[in-house]
Amino acid sequence: MRSTKNITAPPPHIESKDDVNQGDCVYLNNQEELFQVIGIDNAYEKCWVREWPLNPQGSPVFEISIKQICHNQIKN
Figure 1 (cartoon, rainbow, N blue to C red):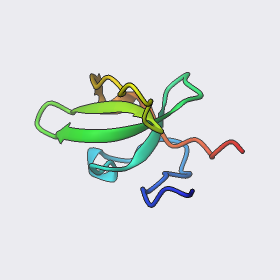
Figure 2 (figure 1 turned 120 degrees about the vertical axis):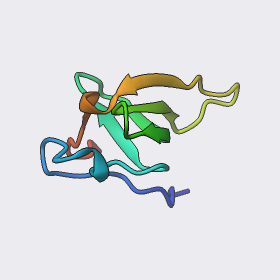
Figure 3 (figure 1 turned 120 degrees about the horizontal axis):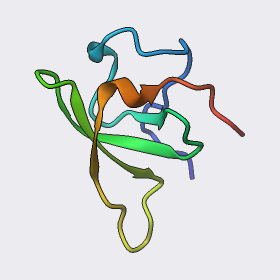
Figure 4 (figure 1 turned 90 degrees about the vertical axis):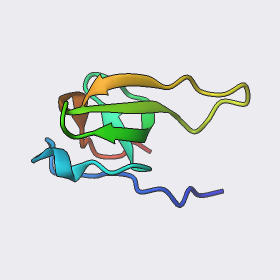
């Protein structure tokens, strides 16, 4: 089953905090796992993410800096 969520692709770095939207699936710096953006606080350049796809027991949400998000190419 394919996800209908946006999966970000290049450019290699976030150009601005406006490039990240709630619901986007993104990679974090130095991580191979995919994460979903749950919420964004542009004033503090923070966002909340959880691992994607969701785990059957739930995926914990955690806060990170928007600067930690990278737009890597999707690995098949």
